[in-house]
Image 1: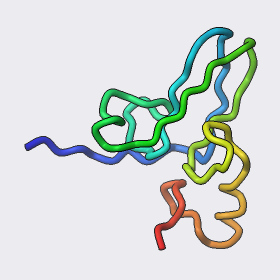
Image 2: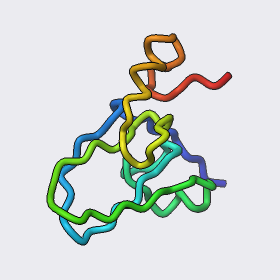
Image 3: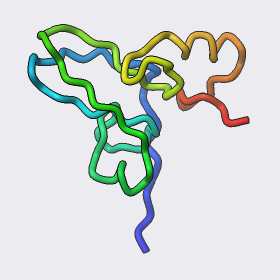
Image 4: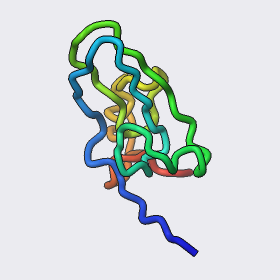
Length: 96
């Protein structure tokens, strides 16, 4: 039996430079080895990944906390969660 070690996000958002015509697959569960992007295990874990295709070269803020309402983009929800004491030390929302 294999075990998977959770690698929590290092930060609540990731600023990345994207290239036009390139599709990026964002991982919503935070367990990907290539976070914030999906890896081969995401599908097996049931992660609801979101595809994003860049139309131009630019900087994009990808969500790291998983609470965004604008996936895969960071919408600042981590700030609200932190202010309200709902953000854990691993930069993921606390489970209720």
